[in-house]
Image (cartoon, rainbow, N blue to C red):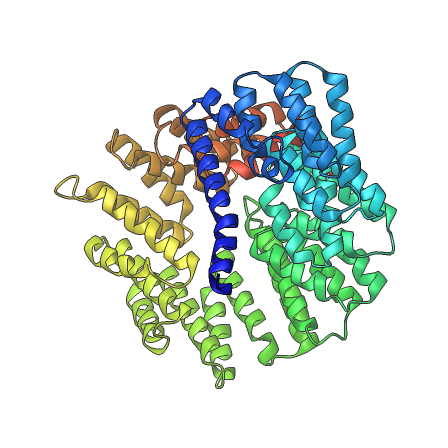
Length: 601
C-alpha cells in the first residue's frame, strides 16, 4: 500500500466520525428549534458522557433538559462537566441556575459564589461572566462579581461603564453617577465624561444627585480643579451662570488664570440674556484686571449688561438711562475715542434716540462714528442701520429705506446684509405691502443667523395666517400700523388702537395676537393689572392656540415678580402638565422647584 493511500485512509478514519458527529448535533439543534425537546435530549445524550463532545453540546443539552424539567439529568450532566472543567465559572453558574429552578436557593448561591471566586482573578473571565449575568438579568450577581474583582485587583477603575448601567437598572442613581465620575477621572478626558453625563443623567433626581456629588468631591479634593471644572460645566448646562461664576472665580484666583474662564462665562451669560450675572462677571474682570488688553471690551459689556437690565425693567426710568449715558461718557473720557470705543458710542447714540427722544443728538453721534470708521466698513454699515431706524422714529421711512438698501448692497450674503433686508421687509409690512414683505421674508427664512431666520419666519407666518381672510385685510393693516407705533415708542396711541381692534374685530384670528401684544405694552407701561387681564383672556379663550403657552408662562413670571408664589406655581404647573411640548418647559420646571422650596444650591 502506498504512503498516499495510507494517509487518505487515516484522514478518512478521522473525518468521517467527525462528519457524523456534526450531522447528529445539527439534527439535535433542529429538534430543539422545533420544540421537540425529548428528541433533542435523545440525540445530545449520546455525547454528554465524553469530555470534548459534552463541551460542544453543553448549552443546547441543558436547554432541552430544562424544557423537559429533567433536573436530575441536568444535575448529573453538570456534575460530570465540573469534574472535567472545574475552573470554568460559567458551568458553576449553570449549576446554580438549575438548583435555583428547583428552589434550592442556598445551594444555588454557593455555586454562584464559587463562579465569582473563580472569575475574579481574571479580567477576561470577569468580563465573560459579567455578560452572562447581565444577559440573564441577574443584576445583583453582576454587581457582586465586579466588586469582588475590584477588591482582588485593587483597582476601582475597571468596568465603570458596565457598573453605571447596572446601577441605573437597579435604581441607584448615586452609585451610577459615582461610576461615571470614576470613569472620567480614569481616562483623563473631561469632555468625554461631559458628553456621557449629558446623555445619561437626565431626570431631576439624577441631576440633583450629580450636583450634590460634585460639591462633595470638591470638598474631598480641594486641591484638584477637576471636579470644580466639571461643576462649572454642569451649572452652565442648567444656565445657572452666577453659580458657575462663583466656582470659576475661585479657580481664577487660585490658579491665576488672568480672567480667561470668567470672561468666557461672562460672554456666555450675556448671550443667554442673564444680564445680571454677566454684569457681575464683567465687574470682577474690570476690578481684577485693569491692565488686561480686553479691559475696554469688558468695560463696554458691563455697561451693555446694565443697559439691558434697565431696558427690561418696566416702566423704564429716564433717570436710569441718563446714568447709563454718563457711564459711557466716563468710559470714553478714560479710554478716548478710538477704534476700541466706537461700539460704545453707537450704544450711547441709541439710548438718546430710543429712550430720551433726542433723535438729533443720536444722529450727530452716529455720523461722527461713521467719519471715524474709514477702515471699518462693518461699523459704518451698523451705523447706517441705526440711522435708518432713527429716521423711522422721526417718521421719515424713505430715508430709512435708502440707508437699509445701501447696507444690503455693501453686505451681500452676510448677517448685516440679511439684517438690512429684514428691516426693509418690516418697512413694507408696516406700510401694508404684505405680498412684498412676505416675498422677502420667505427668502430670509434661510438666513445664516438663527435670530434673523426666526424673526423672518414668525413675521411671514403672521402675514400668511392673517391675510386673504377678507377683501380689505383691514385687521392686518391695523395690526401692522400698531407695530410701527410701538417701534416709534408711541405706546399710548398703540394701546388705544389695540383696544379699538378688540372691539372691531371680535373673533378674528388675530385676536390672540392683539391680546398678547397689548399685554406686552401694558407691561412696558407698568400697568401690571391690565397686563394680567389680557394674558388671562388668551388662556381662557384660546387654550389650544399657539400663543397659549406664551401667555401662561408670562402669567407665571408676573405673579412670581409680584411675590405671589402660589399663583405662579399654579401657572408653571399648568404649563408643565398641559403644554409638555412648550419651549418654556425646562425653565418652568426650574422655577416651580425653586418656588416649591426644593434645595437647589
